[in-house]
Length: 324
Image 1 (cartoon, one colour):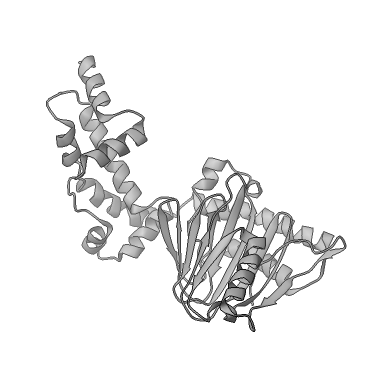
Image 2 (cartoon, rainbow, N blue to C red; image 1 turned 135 degrees about the vertical axis):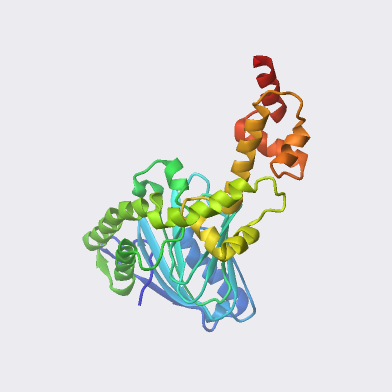
């Protein structure tokens, strides 16, 4: 059985903490569940139907720089809302072991299959949804443990890692060791922590380098998008239908590149608009340019263009006309 952990109990060693909500009413169970999660991932609020949280049990354990927990919920929908702690340099880890897991953060939404592993920023608000309830593994560690820049680290968030990925299985083994055996001596726990951190670069390398197979599968998707930018109704369902795959499959391909379908479509439309505005004819209006690349809302086009390039569309057109 596999699980995750928390914080030193005393100076002489570290012990897992087992907990069981049976016997509590809903209000008591909600407070107690939130308190256990707080020790691992920070402040959270739990949304569940009546009688769900009193059926929760689990175990947690951890070190100063590594915390994990496994908890078991009844087979009912559950949502966990985290506040995030700005400046905390914490990265959260999670996976659902009895059903899908839907995670939302920073305007992105990712669905992970049973057993798939996700990293989530601990500095921003987030939502975790378990449509079928069941077992949830979660934990946290400092972002510095990854030994990469903050910008690179941010690109690894919300990227599903398959449960079959061997280095991931090693990470989970060390987490399970801390949860299932104890008490641990300080040296023993620190050794598990060190081994955990040594495996992280392998996980990072996997996320940074999509396989050749993934790139080959994504190429026709991108090609179709690039050829149909002017279609204002273009969406992931249309592209998936044309290519004979599911929308979820298309989204997973983009997630493995650290982006989403909607982000790619927006980026390509903005780039094409900038190209047209830079041609300098002056005859094409801003509105006509926006519509030509698939935007149906001029104010949205102006806002996203300025956010992406730091200048208004009109400034690009005027500069190009002045250079003619």
